[in-house]
Amino acid sequence: MDIGFGIWQILILAIIAVLAIFPVVAIIDIFKGRFKGNYDRLIWIAVVLLLNPLGTLLYFLIGKDRKVVENETQIKSQDL
Image (cartoon, rainbow, N blue to C red):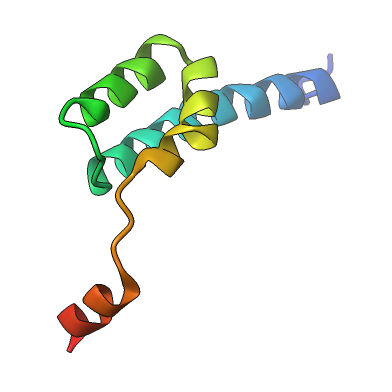
């Protein structure tokens, strides 16, 4: 009787882990960021949750470019 994991079980567990971790990372990034539109944050959360894993992939490819980027001089002046 073999109780050990085979390569297929490890591969399936890795895929499940990736499908569970990436949406969480995307949602945390959405909450931390500032977006240009008023409803962009809400729309991206819905896309990530409802269209997983495609929604998560879309957010990392398209959504991160839609965030407001702060100027480096503003960031440095806030640190001082």
